[in-house]
Amino acid sequence: MSQKFFLYARKSIDVEDKQVLSIDAQLTELREYAKRENIEISAEFVEKQSAKIPGRPIFNKLLNDIEKFGGNILAWHPDRLARNSVDGGRVIYLLDTGKLASLKFPTFWCDSTSQGKFMLNMAFGQSKYYVDSLSENTKRGLRQKVRMGIFPSQAPIGYINDSRTKTIVVEKKKSRVIRLAFERYVKGNERLEDISNFLAKNGISTRSRKRISKTRVAYILANPFYVGLFNYAKELHEGKHEPIISKKLFDEAQEMLKFRGQPERKPQNEPQPYCGLISCASCGMMITGEYKVKKQKNGNVHNYTYYHCTKKSKTTKCPEPCIRQEELDRQLSSEIQKVSLPKDWAEELLKMAEKDFNNSAPSLTASVKERETRLLVISQKLERLLNGYLDQVIDEQDYRLQKGKLLLQKKSLQEEMTSLSHKQNDWLEPMQKWIKEAQNINGIARDNNFFAKKVVAKEIFGSNLLLQNKSVRASAPKILNSFGKMGGNQWDALRASHLLASKKPLSSILVGGTGLESVTSSMSTTRSNQLS
Image (tube, rainbow, N blue to C red):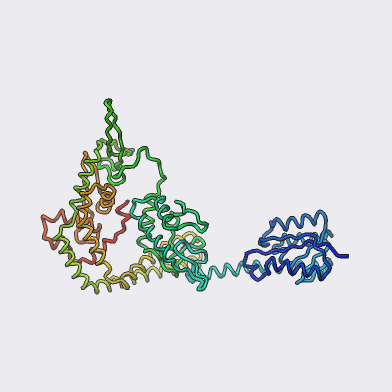
């Protein structure tokens, strides 16, 4: 007479089940084994779940039924039943109580004798040991990948995991979109929601094909992976993957995230074009715009836009009156026109730039050596920091914090050295482009495009525009009191040149004694300072 058995087949997607037969293969083998051994299968239980931890619903139902009604189990191997001590102990306990009459495995001998239960217990223990050791080996392998500079997880958007080389490589199309997203955001006129829309329009979505949320956009913009670093186990590490943005652009994005990280408040009125551009000269608060509609008794309707101080200072009662948008626009256009680069100045600057371009090799070599020295100092600091951590002089939190700061500094220096060593004299083309832009701002000032004027005004004046007594003025440029020295930016230098044009020769206004290259290097000063 044949015995009735419950057939149980299981396979998970975890690493420890990689070499195990598929569920279909297990079912085929077990059915053939049952036929050979004259075993009658009363029911089949199939489960796709890991056995590392207790809680498998189908397996629990099988044991509950056996506990109530008794029965036998047929499985491919003991590790199909349990890889943890709780489930394994429960199976052996059911054997002890006699409710589980017997176990059959095509690949393992077991009966309900003391010797059989001892062997079964060993098989369960071996299965658990295999899982535990595999987990430790996996973690050890991940730590080794981190030490090698390889991010041991799924690559972020803009990269792909190369299964052939086990590395992370740039995905050209998406990486260009991510770079553009950074560049658009640091300009200061787009919100996280706007960047989300930009990514959606360019086919960038989550792995589940969903739209990237504002929170996810902020995470992308704050992810150091894009500059060649990565966070793992709450610690910053150097990566071997190729950066897709510069460290400078990343820093600008962090400044902008910090600047715009205030809680969003719903405005009482629709924001006007010049909001966030000008400060009140009396109390220091920002100037805001307000749209008004005036309806007369005769039916005429007049639309006005006024700009005035937000009057949010807790210490100063601001007396400043409001100003009409038309008058503000006229004055702002006049201020922009004052900074336009005259044609003769542009021609002289181009000549001097080309001359300096041909004679900049010595200064380039000196700059590289200076950065090499600073890089060596940072490497020494990192080594001392690690020794202090290993000697338990420095706690883990301080170690991670200081290491992160030093790695960011190291990345900036490495990027500067790469730019100096492999892209020699790359300052000339940006300067030529800026000279052309500076000559064209007259046209923007005369145009009626308020948004374009705001962008240009941000570039030129930064946060130095003030409103007082219905009059817009720009505070003195940063470079004015130390002309010819490093300080300010290219627009500050041009504004200072206009102010000094009537007092000094043209040559002394255009460039100081250090040459054009050192001055023009300040043109790449982070734009975040201008937008703050």
